[in-house]
Image (cartoon, rainbow, N blue to C red):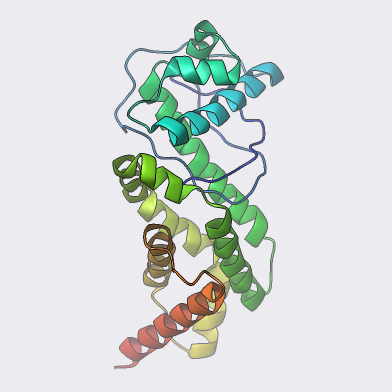
Length: 241
């Protein structure tokens, strides 16, 4: 999943430097990594400072543009450097290889998406309002996402990433909706299958990316609410049998 996102500054990353994302932007989903295998070679650890944060931020933003334009298989470090306005020597201070760059970018986009979700939804303390906030978050993401473009230029790359983050996203959604599930459990007098409900919500989001609704997404919030209601009813029926 990929988005049109104004990234904030992030600390330097690469082999030997821990990846961490901060910053704000539109809802987005992380760009997939070409490979989960360790990068070849080893980049030098760089002490964090404002200039290095800005440099890495520029490199990652440029990586997104190059991948969307050329695809993941044909990404060129030289093109990334030109777009970011940095030399190859500067690039290799932070990233050991193309694989290291893509893997770091993948983690950054994933973590940034989840952090924005938590910052947007986690502050809402009313259970029903938090559920509505999540639905609106999903709606905004699908409106602004560039994931469909990624599927066009690098389908195998994108699908592999969806598989990679799928279970992690289920856990993040469960944590975000904890007060919603607590409220439903108390009102219904049963223990709902939280993992299943979150899994179905995420599968619905993926289906909207893979097979978008031809008539538009005007009814998406209502559809997600109906989906959740159906899952709750089904969980209640199974529990009471």
